[in-house]
Amino acid sequence: MPHIIVKAMLLVRNGLPAAPGEAQAGDKLLFSRGYDAVKKEAFLRPLGGHVEFGERGEETILREMKEELGCEALGVRFISMIENLFTYNGEQGHEIVLVYEGKLSDESFYKKDSFTFMEGERKTEAGWFSKSDAEKEGIPIYPPFAYFTLNYETPPSPPLLGGELKRGSE
Image (cartoon, rainbow, N blue to C red):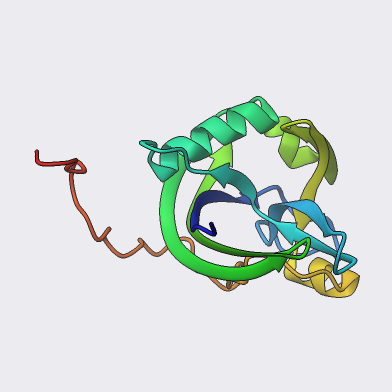
């Protein structure tokens, strides 16, 4: 039976000084590469993963960065939520994506244009992309979102639920 999946994804901005002729410092975001074999389409997506039952989105980000990259995520802050209806490898999907911003504790990632990491049993490539990089490559970024126009310095709207989550009849 189809169901809704909840994911948490981290937007990491590369704040290293830009080289002459390159995008401004901080204009590149970290995305992993993916491929839909049915559509024969490559795509980019932020790093992150499935929120496990009883886990908050921020905890998912911390766990996923540790599992995938072997480093801590720092300054993790909720910025938005996306509802995404999609088809991937011929299967319909429906997900709620919690979007966070933050930094990586291992500064060596910021000095690499691209790198590989293990996502479960699969070797995955990730790299830094500006909006123009993605456009030049003609590669979409999923889920659809205003990744490059979002003002990260503006505090997000307060969460719909404040304080501790009440469970059951508590």
